[in-house]
Every structure is written in C-alpha cells, then in structure tokens.
Image 1 (cartoon, rainbow, N blue to C red):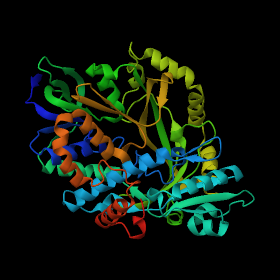
Image 2 (image 1 turned 180 degrees about the horizontal axis):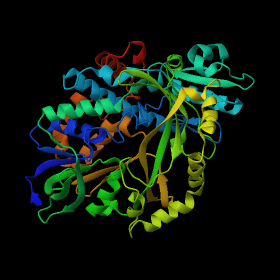
Image 3 (image 1 turned 90 degrees about the vertical axis):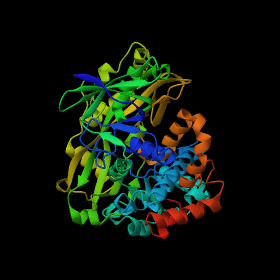
Length: 499
C-alpha cells in the first residue's frame, strides 16, 4: 500500500543529536514551519547519540592531544584546538539559552563538571606536553590549565593512575577543572520531548528508503513503516539527512552532484567498562593519552569518568573493531552497496593509501581480553581483569573523498554536504561531532537558508551571544558568557574557567 501525505516545510531524517539541535534551532527561528522527523528505531538518540555508543562526551579540545600538533621545531600548533573549543562554547551558550527559556529543564541530567586531563610518559612526550601547555595556557580559552610532572601532585590528581606505577620513567599531566561530561543521549531525548511539545511530528519505526526530486522542486521521500510494512510518500522543501552512518546511502540516492565521489569507511569501537564500584570511586576525570605511533586519531586512549543514568561509570578505550555495517543496527551489505560508479576509484585509492589503517584494525580485532588489559594497565597499573567488562560502541563512518592532496583521502572529522541550492544537507563523519552540533547546525542554516538568515540573526544572537565573534579575541565577553552559562547550567564556580 502506498499513498502521498501532506508536505512539510522541513524533514529531518534520524532522531539523533544533530536533528534534535537543528529542529530546536528552526523551531525558535520560525515557529510556524511544519517539521517532520523520521527515525528507524523506536525512540530518540538510540544510535550514534546514545550515551553508550558515543565516546564524544564534551570535546572542548582541553585534553585531546590529537587536536594539537607538534611542529618540527618542537613548538605546538593549537589552531585546531582553538577552533573546536570555540565551537563547544557555542553549544554551551545554546544549552544555557534553552534552560533559561525553560524549554528544557534539569541540566544536571545531561551536563556535569569534570576535570579534563592529558597524560604522557617518557622524556620526549613530557617536553611536548610542556610546550603544549605553554602555548595553550596563554590563550584565554584555556585559562586555568595546570601542568605538573611532580609525582606527588599527580598522585593527588589521579591516584588510581599513579598507584603501582614505575616512576623510573618521567610522567606529566595537564588538568583543566572547567571540563564537562556531557550525556548526549539524555540531551537528545530532552530536545525531542521539547520538539514534541511544539507539535513537531516525530515518526518512529519508519525507514526512509528513497529520496528524489519532484518536478516542482520539492524532495519526495519514500518511507516504510517497519511494523505494518505500509509505504507512504512525504514531500518537503528542505531535507536534512542526519542518520549517522546511514546518511551516505541517502545522500547517494538524492543524486545531488555534491554527493558524488564520496565514500565511507566504517569503524566500530569497543570500550572497557569497570564493574567494581570501589575502583570507579577512585577516579574523577577524563584522562586522554597519546595515540601510539601509526595509530589513527580515533584510537587515542582515554580513561573517562562518565555519568550515565545518574550513576558514575568508568570507561577505557577505544579499541577499534571492524564491521561492514554503517550503523550498529545496519546491514552487513552497507559497505558493499555504498560503492558506486562515481566513487569506486575514490574508494580504491583510499584502500591503497590506508593499508596501515587496515593492518591496525585487523590487529585490534584480534586482541584478546588480556592484551586489552595490558593496554589498560598503561593507565591503571594495578587493573584486574575481573573488574572490567566490554561494551560495543556505535559505528562511525569515516568520510573518504577526493581532495587537493589527491584521490581517496580518509577524513577524520565531521562533514556536511549541502546541495548547491541549499534544499538538502547531509551530515557525515565522526568526532568531534556531537560536541560541536550547534555550530555545525548553524552552518547548515546559514548555507541552506541564506535569504532568511539576515532576518534570523537577531534571534540567533539572543540564543548565542558570541555568534559571529571570536571569543579568544574578546576575553571580556568570554568571561561574561562563562559566568552566565556556568550559573544557568548548574556548574560550579571553579568550573567556570573556560570549559
């Protein structure tokens, strides 16, 4: 059975943090627009945004060493860290606006204060960390960062990590008390509850199987109800494809030229989770190490305190895994069916270039539990196997595209592909993803609604006071915004200093 339904102004595909953010922004800017959401699963935030699937729990570039690059002269380039931190500040301002406007409540259910730390071992790495600290601590965005290579101070900061450690090798860490732990699953559910109260039509257990342009310039979606099997056709002026790894197939079906020559490479993640409450209580921070030589950026090891369902958890990872699925709930044929005549050369070029990554993934898949425990013991020397279980994280599909550097370049980041006329946008890629969702969705709005944007700018500045400005270049505004967001989001005064 098939029939046509009334058209929407906007259709959002996927009920994750990106659609939740875009829908909430648009409802504030144009409340009268009809927005419809289609989600394959039975509730919001169950794929990439789910708290157990999403490792990105507040990427503010305070501790992630892969965002700061050591140059040949030993100095450290912090441009990427500045960019990501500025983008995270935008998210903080928007969340603060939502709480202040009583559009969402109980911010402690999705955001908490938590120190962010970087930890390194070995003389060369300690020198790098000190140079990085010097470059960052002079920047107002990273004010409050501390550095120490004193074992006594480190025992105070990270007792679990320091206990039983061989101190013959130099160890150093940086710490920023203003870091946060963000539960994007909880936030996604809150935002969709809010959107439902604003009469946004959210349709669960519905899979979008096709998308095509109609003669009158609208986008027509073929949507199948997973329970009844009925197929309906929905039309909209604007479609956002935010279906995680599933976005690539729909982008390809749209036929827009901007979606050509783009491929995807799926990587799954495995985390170790501590099942011993006594061990969990001994650690209170997100601690990021340095990726091993030759390992990809998504493999940076970290020991994270997380708050999930109001319980304190301790996770370590990620260990990479491989599955040809593009979603955790996807199909084993996802990778094969994503290869098209226009991207086959791009994919083959990437395959040839990324042999080290392939080798790395094979090695990771073959690791035994004891071998994984050995990696954990580089962080927690006294870790016991019986205290740790495994949890399989969500699938991440890394974008492969042709760049100036050549064909088939694997991208480690978040990418938005937009049609030339702004009528469709698709979100691809991975980290820093969720943490920068507000910035990314504002970019989508700016690109896709250029004629309306100037009218909306006043409202956008009400929601995000720093919009269009660099906080790094406006330290007074930065301080003012921090005081306000800290208070509104229920974060402690100590935490305020540049989260």
